Length: 226
Image (cartoon, rainbow, N blue to C red; front, side, top):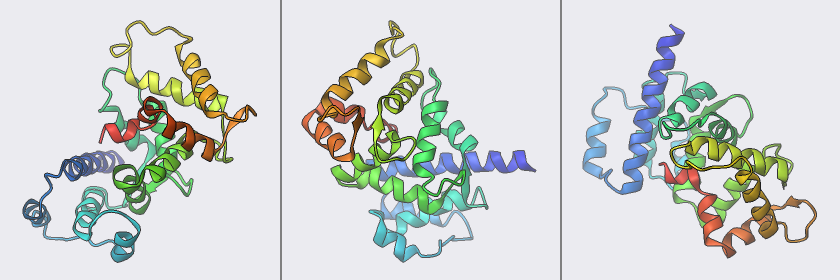
């Protein structure tokens, strides 16, 4: 029973990701969106749909499609970390995405209860896919702030950078040496830690990213796989 539910949850999230890809590419038109909604006799409507529409950059129709991807295949309406890791790993078959997916899951799990509800997920996606530059950078800062104390220290940055290298895999970096992640952390901190106090604040993070296009691109890995 539990295995079947897990399988349906994974299928549901996969369908959700496909819908997201089409939302971003602009191929999710009104006509085919209506067709998708008619594929089921039950049109799920999350509570507070109007509120979510006001709080996100998605339309009501898009929210209905995304919500159905959750609810039809996983009636509990939540995604746990195991399922999230399984889905995310499919984007990086040549590497180990488990640690980065763990940090990403925690960033979506704003209530820290071990599961992502539809509202948590769609609020995060709204920022990552359609938010302002500052909103995206703020969200990414919170991803790197693992212990959620309002700062990024060297240990946190090192953990995230190593997780990214593990995720990209040996096929992407065939000549990767063990000290390369640490070199990147040193370079990041040299640019970000303006007052040299050993930690990076939100404002320092945003300023450094705005000043360096390469650094900004490196901060937005999740958006690139959607």
